[in-house]
Image (cartoon, rainbow, N blue to C red; front, side):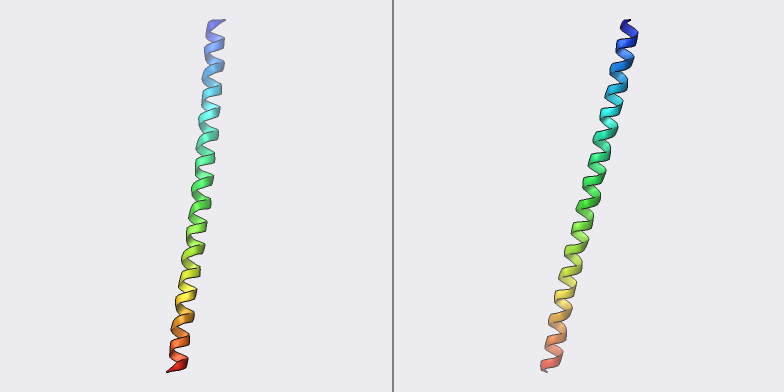
Length: 57
């Protein structure tokens, strides 16, 4: 009886750890995508500025 309860608790803990790990990975992936989007936006802005300077010379 006690072994069964311990086994169930260990399984529940393993599921919880797996879920937390998946959530952390999803958050990391989303953060990386946002950082990439920001970097691409900044690169585009800089390119637009450079193009503007070239046109005005």
